[in-house]
Length: 307
Image (tube, rainbow, N blue to C red; front, side):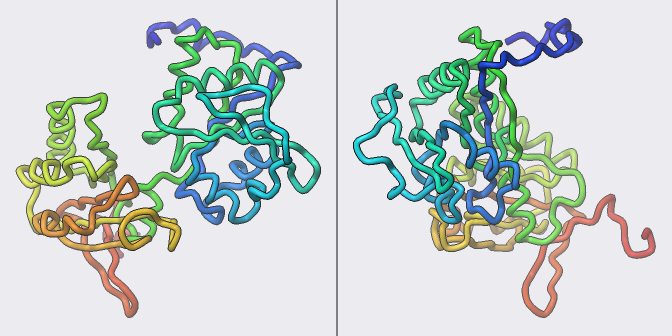
């Protein structure tokens, strides 16, 4: 995919064929219905086909965004087979039928191609992504696959969601009210040399840093940040933000406020893929009211007189 094709950016939009559907890449935030946008719910409820992992299917059933498993039509499966699995046909309360396809790691190429085919056949497809599709989610995959498979005729729409940095920050108070950045510690596609370079640049530049995929060598990342930032700056570990008791990490939804220097002592509180770490700056403060502790990073270091 080339970034030099300026003609495409300036060309007028082509009308979608009347017999085509739309591929929606839908961010569902933390996953539970109360933190989803209404747009995300509407798209999933009205789609002809929904692609979602088992965990997200469970979340989406909690308020009927997806029908219960009992809504599966007995003896009826979808005509196509995707990644060795048949789609389940569900009947919604309004009588509308909907195909549900399980998403899983290692099968994303096949799932993308199936989505393209269904859209060309007139179906609206909701491809579910946790958090926001543009923050380490599914959107780049679908666009990259569309480019590789010459699927430029397939209409694609991104439905935004609440990413972990924002849901975690909400639990912590106001840690991201100044400039911040997110850095993934996954080295599946990027080597540690590049990750370390980004960590160091973020620390030197004074960004509040939110680490994703913390189950991958978070201690190594913390060591790099400590070389450029004081040990006493506030930091926090957030698990399963926005998921309450439906979390899949250690003790469901938790927040631990500590310091950058003490983060390595909290190894037992860094769980799976639902863990993120927030590292503040010299301007970040721990503030307490009568009920709990918060992290606050004033915008531009401003105080009350600045208002």
